[in-house]
Image 1 (tube, one colour):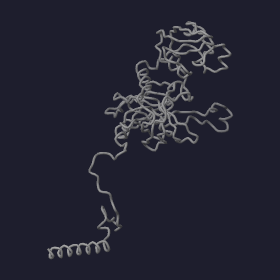
Image 2 (cartoon, rainbow, N blue to C red):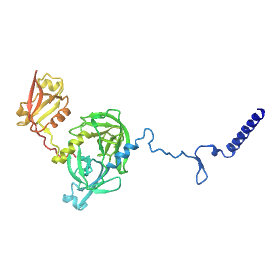
Image 3 (tube, rainbow, N blue to C red):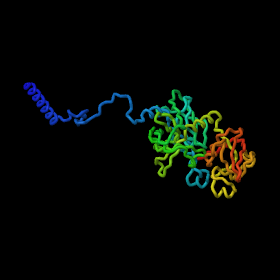
Length: 379
């Protein structure tokens, strides 16, 4: 037993001596992943990963699924100086002719048939539209139709084997959900930014006629317009449209049109060439104590009507200035935005029930909406 202990102690002594020599003369031998560069610099490198799974918390899977369907859009149009026909201007500056004005934006391929969703302001008044895919393919796009009231447009390209994004259910989004914004900001190339859903149902921002925005703090910059807002599975939740900014860059407040709205616009444009909405011919205003007193109405909620178009659907149904619309088809209308949305969703030619308050009395009237006139381009 004594000899065994002696042998063990000698072995430990030799190993400790060897470790001391190596630690003194070649310490990098003892460092995991230690290597030397071509210049002889001692470096430590992480071991090669053999797992195909992304790191915890990574959004690479969502980006990989959605990014190929997000395209860059370049537009150009010929413009002339506003005073080019002025003889004095031509005398001093000569004939300036026409100049090409270019624009930049993004779009989302939503069908293997070549349909692309983007913003109306990206392609508005453009003479030429070129779409660039992530695989570097380029194609001229044609405008199938636009809807300035939601700032959406539908383009079409003639290419095969197109990558198509998967449409999600934007009605299931909740505040705090993680989302990614994909687009081509400032023309630097496709970029993915991440954030959360900051708010839902944003309206009364003065951006569009019909507003129901998803608000996000994912960085959205000029050039991102028309790009995709996707969830962590890479499914399309919205079309990036606008930002709140004092500098022109991202300040963490961006807005996207929900995909539920985009699908309705897409169907209307492809089927009819335009989006058909209901219209009743009234001038609505937010209900205030001053207006309520002026018209002598005892209401604390709803939308007050300050003007009615003579011979319009509302006038024919008996709606008068001073009436307060409380609901449309049993859907409460607490502000002008809700009333516009509710009326726009009505089918022209089909009677709809309106709940009104006139003075102290509550009324129920049946209005047959007409077709909302198409507005002029906003920009």
